[in-house]
Length: 271
Image (cartoon, rainbow, N blue to C red; front, side, top):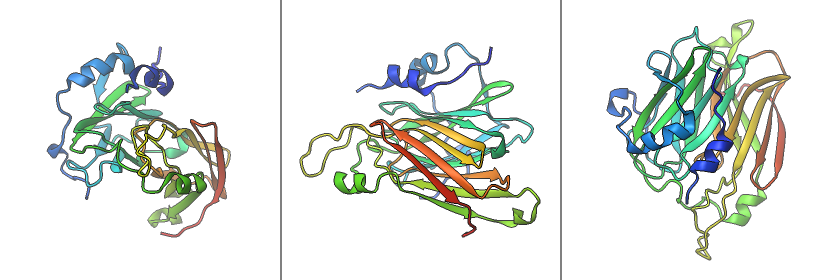
């Protein structure tokens, strides 16, 4: 029976109170007593294979900004199908950062996101394929990401909440009959972690974040995200995909306050 990772169950049990390094030898996964405690809640007794040769993760050894740490995933084995990926930040208050599901038009996975890192921590990615679960990761030195002050005051942040932008990059693949394209989706949302303080009242701002998102290319699903407090403020996702000829990408999202956002983003080449 294939194991299915779900963020809702994991969050319920686990929520308690510069330039990317190109030499991955600099920051391999470290031994972690925290992971020994978390593993059973996240994957149970399922065997985790080493993802070397399947998937690489690029992350800075020392993060410039702990509230927006860039994480880049690149699939190395183009014969495999990565249908899902779970991002775990061992030492964060809610270690499961997000669970992603990937549609067939994502092709060979090439995906970037930004996360919060609260203290020096392993960042793990557990990839689900037709052959089981595979894990890789990096050790990142960063602190204070989950409690870092928001960039805007609450009123300003809520006023623009849900606005979305698409940036698309053509590259050389535009001449192909089914081109491989690269896009970036930006969503305006404070993604409050519950650990930040209002800079005027000094009271904690209640957690309020995007908990589900879908990106569609016409009628074809590109990817989904079930997210937690570790996804950065104003989430940004950059990804490659196989263009099926649809005129637009559609983004649908919900947040923990029950808000629903949906925007149709016409494709355009501007990079």
